[in-house]
Image 1 (cartoon, rainbow, N blue to C red):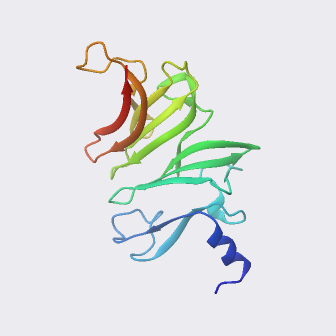
Image 2: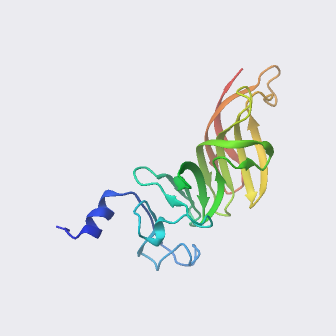
Image 3: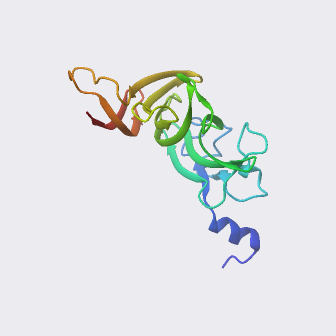
Length: 193
């Protein structure tokens, strides 16, 4: 039985870890030697893995800060997290230690809107990302399914209120779910109007 305080604390918190079956498939930054466990992120204060990469002073919120983890077959790692920054709790998406989206930041494809909520996401082997999210835009058009092919290069796959191709008179409703394959094809669910 582990009784030392650091072990007890670590067992009670969420950890994001990686085990690599093939060291050459995942960058050394994210992967330990084959079959070895490495802690990438933790909600525990006092550990370097509690600090959000690229955002000085931000930490992963204890008690639910690390929500969803997605790993592609070759080892691209994505994490949806609640981060604590300047007294605020913010939704964020990290992929391979890069903060891709953060609540309150302007959306790259709609700069007058800011990110409100990440609903779902997925990553593929090349690092492309599919995200289903809500923005601070008008309620009739504030849900998106988007894809980032390369850092900063975004494509809107579907937006609430926009016409659905090949379905005359039908518009996208609320998007939910997001998947992406290695050909950068995005899948998602939606309610149509």
